[in-house]
Length: 233
Image (cartoon, rainbow, N blue to C red):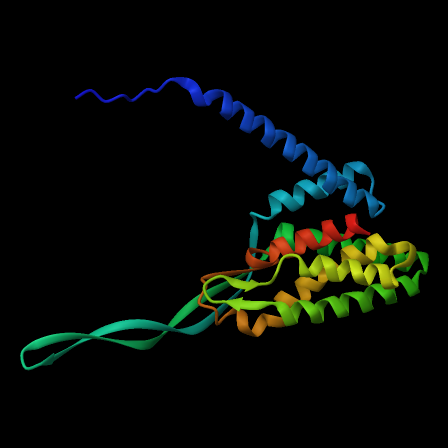
């Protein structure tokens, strides 16, 4: 029997079409995200840089702490009864090392941008804007903490669309002319504080070898909350 290892290149045009569509999608996405950063008052080169840092930085986790926890482990012991061996599973507690890391794209980039805006507004004396930003971040953090759920073996996860919707609502209600900034700050910091930092005590007991602040189950919430919130307002 003869086996064919080479097939007619019927799929090659579809491959090129897929690559072309992927390139167009990435270009459109980059334009949209850059426009969102530009709405925050950032120059276009800085906006492009933040987009790339957010995208590439989502794969980079920087270890910042190490915790040790005891997690349940299923073990099996053998019990003999009338010459027959029965496997009996039971729970045992084993020590596990947990690496706490911070995600560059999901934590450091939005934190740096919000810090920059806080310093800039402080220099301008816009303390009322800073107060509204603080109130919006506090409300968004409480909501994120309520809807966030610890997932064993993964970390903290939360519904993706809730943070941007909350951020948009807060920006429309109290943002005024600074609605894009209020939306971005409350959307990103709300998830970062409410989902990750306020669940710090639960992180080390989730059975994961590494837990990333601003990554894993919360990166999409932080990233989309900041981008969608700015675009929607």
